[in-house]
Image 1 (cartoon, each protein chain N blue to C red):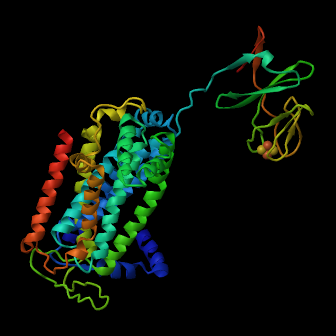
Image 2: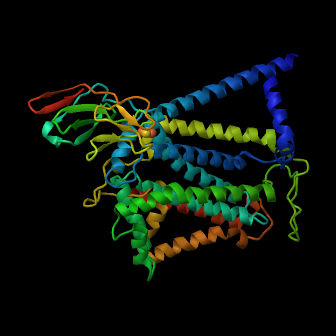
Length: 367
Length: 139
Ligand code: FES
C-alpha cells in the first residue's frame, strides 16, 4: 500500500489530482432524486470503448478487398483463436449500442431533460444517434456477404428518390453504378476512420456540455433542487444539497454497466447469431438477390415507411420531417413543466410515437 | 477495527474479482493476437536445375525465410541463406560482378557466402541440397 501512497503523492505534487477529484468528481453534486436512467450515458460510453477495442482487433485480420473480405471474416470466425469472440462482441455490441441509445433518448424525452437550457445536449446527442446509425450501416457492408451486399444496395438506393441529385448521389455513395469493390473501399474508410473520429469528438462535446450546464433534476421524487436558471447569463446548474458524483453516483453507473455486460455476455455466449439472418453466411453474389431481404431491426420502421408511401420521395420526406422535428424538439417544446403526467400533449405524442414505431417495425418484419 | 477488517476483506474480494475479470479479458485478446504457428518448419524446396541460367541465381521461400541457389559460370551450384548476417536484409546477386551485394549497408559476399567487405560479421550460412535427375532439392 505504501507504494500506492508514494505514486499518489508523486502525481499529486505534479498534477494536483486531489484537486481535480475534489472539484470535478466529489465536489460535483447531482440532484438527490437522480435515478438509474441517468446512468445509461455511462453504459453507452463503455459500449463505445468496447466497439473501438474490438474494432481495432478485427482490423488485425480483416482484409478490405471485395475478393478477400468474406474469406478473411471466415478466417477470423473459424481459425484465429477467439476470433469468433471478438467479432461477435463487435456485431452484437453494435446492435446493443443502438438499443441502449434508444433507451437513453426515451428516458431523456420522458423526463423532459432535453428542455431549456439543455438544448445543445439534446442536439449533440441526436447527432450522435444518427452517426451511430451511419456507422452500423457502413459496417454492415464490410463482411461482404449476401446480406451486406443487398442491404447496402437497397439502403443506398433510397437516396435515389431525392429529386434532381438523387441518381448522382447514389452513384457517388457507391463509387459506381452498382454496389461493388469501390463501395467496399469507401464504406471501409468511413467506418473505421471518419465516423469513429467524429463520434469521439461529439461524445467529448456531449460530456463537456453535460458537465458545464449541469445534470437536470428528474421530475420524480422529492424536489430537492429547483432550476433557478433564468436565461439571462450562463449559470451552472448546481444542486446544493445533492449527492456527489464520486463515489455515490459512480456506483450506480457501475451497477448499470455490470447489468449491461451481463445481458451482453448472455447474448454473445448463448445466442450470438440473434441478430444474424442466414444470408449473413453466404458470400456476396451480385447476380443473385436472396429472397426476403430485410434491414436490421432498427431500420425496419424506416423500411416499412418507405413501402407504405406510394412515392419514395414522400416516404423519405416524412422520415426527414419526423427526424427534424425530434432534433429541434427542445426549441419547439418551450414549457417549463417536466413531469410527464402534467404534460398530456407531450405524453400523447410520446406514447403514440413509440407505438407507431413498434407497429411499423413489426409490420416491416412480417410483411 | 471490526469495520476496518470487513472493509479490507471486501476490498480484497473486489480486487480479486477485478483481477479475474482482467485475466479473462486479456487471455482471449492475447491468443487472438499471438503469432500463428508456422507450418513450414522442416520442409524441402525443389525446382528444376534449368530454372537457373549459368551465372544466375534463384531465390525462394525456405522454412519461413529466404534461400538462394546460384549457378557459377563454371556450372557449380551453391545454396545459401539469402539473409544478410548483419541486420537481416535479403542480399542481391550481382550477375556482372558474380558476387552478393547487401543493399542495406553495402555488405559484399563471394559466391560462396564469404564476407568480402562491409559490416556483415559472419558468412552466409550454407544450405544442404542435392541434385537428382535435373531437379535441385534444398533442405
Ligand atoms: S543488413 Fe546487410 S549490410 Fe547491413
